[in-house]
Length: 374
Image (cartoon, rainbow, N blue to C red; front, side, top):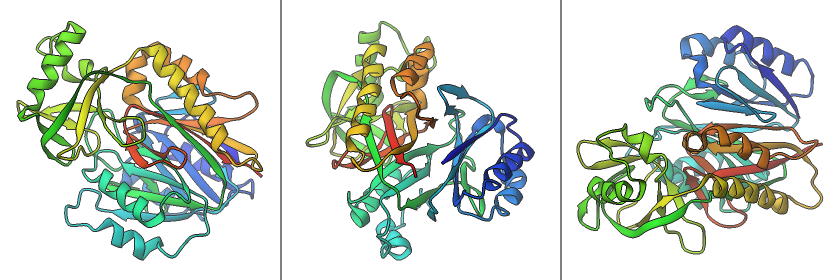
């Protein structure tokens, strides 16, 4: 695998970078991580993507990572020496969609792969349902790594990169016959809870313990933080206080509240099922940075002993990076290895399996993957 950097952030400079990757003669597929700051649109990008002669997959993200650097403009292009089998699944907010049936029809008979890279529109409303269907079809015989594409504007727009163009409200599966090791950790700790989710609708929590959701959340967060929501934008405070959903036998799965819907409902990135129990979490920068280091160690442990890593992939939540601020550089250091190139993105949610545990759509979580080299 070889990494190419486009610092220009324009359709023409991306075209030049894609051409450079293809000219190596070893690019059997292309992974593209682009910055939302490029302001790509289907009208500008589709003619370029449709000309690419090999499978291409990826997305646009608030921040892209390469070699320990953060990019808010430009793209990272990885020339992969394995040919990906890429499937695009539309309708990630479709209430009627049977994702298990769709996946079974599209890729259910294909089992000659070891790793699946998954990118979704991070503002779709049925991501967790799709992830559950993915697990039902493929189980944990393969590794999964990826995340949610999108913008910090919190507005849904085309953000998924495919051979057919820039897409919205869908998911990309890129199946690869490539060994990998994946590690997951978050470092957040409970400050209050658990609370029962007594009313929710997909990614919107309406009540906790039969009380309006924002009333419960506000009372805990204001008491713990000493700040008040009336004096600061909601997300400025909420980015430090995510929810944690209890899962049997595993770490809490983190859900990020990003907005208030009406006066009392909390909008999260990813579904929060009615009947689930959630804690309100908080974290210290040092704990989060140590957790990222644990994700790296788990990824190394989970990589097959006969596979040599050819590339490191770091998928980290953008709201986690915002919470860490300048200390995010220390987290990047914690997931680096001498002599191994790392790329990645700050995403709108993360997708991974942790060893042989559950496949999940996470928020505010560090995911590290090692992809097998030649």
